[in-house]
Image 1 (cartoon, rainbow, N blue to C red):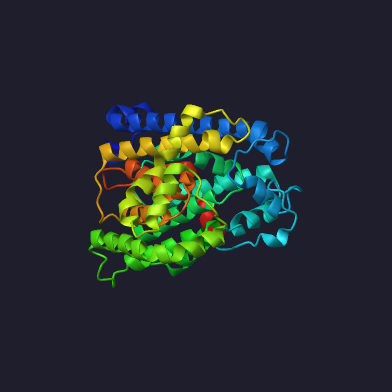
Image 2 (cartoon, rainbow, N blue to C red; image 1 turned 90 degrees about the vertical axis):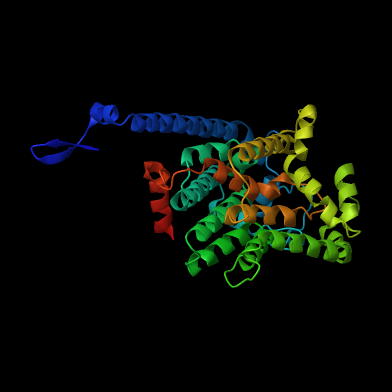
Length: 391
């Protein structure tokens, strides 16, 4: 923005800039409000950390706030007592078929302090935002608020957990897809981060990249690809479920609805139950809001999970109103692949579908214009610069 003075254009400063371009003033106010909301959420999260999360990690208030964070703290040697009552650490390998403690264990052993873990989690969170804002034209402030308003994601930055690593690996994958799949180093890094979170996420990411590879003849026929994926699971799962249940230590299914649906998929009916199971994973926990507070100690199951399901429902409705489903969009196709594969699980866990929530939020926050506005915001540029120096 400039004005002609003495035959030369000079930049407009202060109020003159806003008078000549009211849009700039509106965007500045929006950004200010957005940062105030984010600052308020961060301050509230710090209060939650010092008054509830940190005491619960040390056994001071007997609250279960993170899904498995107390166990990760014990496994990393930070806490003495195993919350599940086991004494033999050798019975809990870092990676096995039914579990993966590698990422949380590594973070816990390196940092060994709850507040340092919180700071590191927040750093990873904003690196994930910077990856998205660097490659996709999004309203980064809106995206940040949408993510922090999800209780599972907010808890993930307050505790030692896997979800923050899953969030980061998904953001890195979105960056990799958007920038033309050119960097092999980035590909290796995102697969390593995914492995540190969950080995299942690493496999799904690799499988998705094979499905969408340029040489794959089904890459352009994505509806057919999804149908083949569902059909394959439908045929294969009935032969594998006894071994899966044995590896996971499942003797009987929890919950009436999920038990009926899982039993059906053991009889070649996964193609029938896949949509109900996805819906149950994403939104089923919201029913528990009617009984919120019944178990005052298990905050995670009585409050975090129901509110996460509610957040999933709100974001899904918002997406359906604001956008259209387009399978040519790599991110949306990735969300569907995640949902279909993780719905195979014989139990419901809304946190397993956090990549789906992230992708829906990206699509909601995406700018309609081609030019990206988000990376001009100084804090995101600083986070991105620090991340690049670390790598």
